[in-house]
Length: 143
Image (cartoon, rainbow, N blue to C red; front, side, top):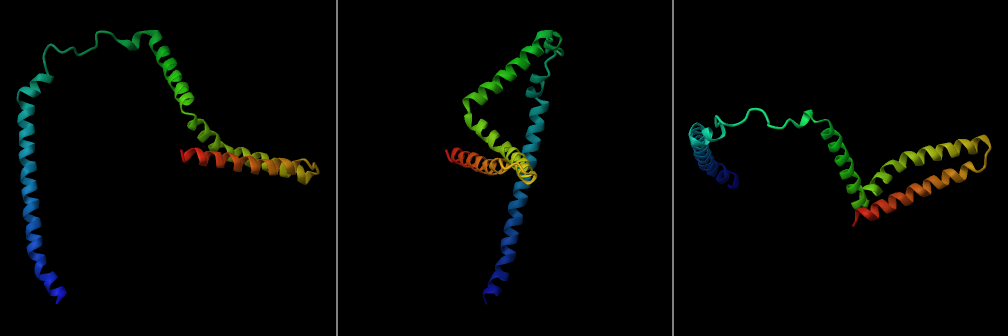
């Protein structure tokens, strides 16, 4: 019985949806026509004024010190960004700490295998150091 009711209601809902879709398409067509009218009318002429310059008055690309000044200010902006957001420094250190810990740990392990007993201290120290850096990074990310 439930299925029969669902099937009986479906055609009317589909017809309703089709009518809504046709209405939406009609409105979109009206909007397109209005946009084309605006482009061809006074608004389109406003942006294509005959007295608009085609080339800039000052060509900043030909001035030699502009590129140097731009690179200086970009570098200064990066430095200030890093100094005012220490979280970036901590995230960067945490990102590269894995590779450093693996390199130190494997080197220490090789030294230990060769016979240098201090190598095991470097291996254990790299694991502990990596763990501490990741703990600090996780703590900072919670802020």
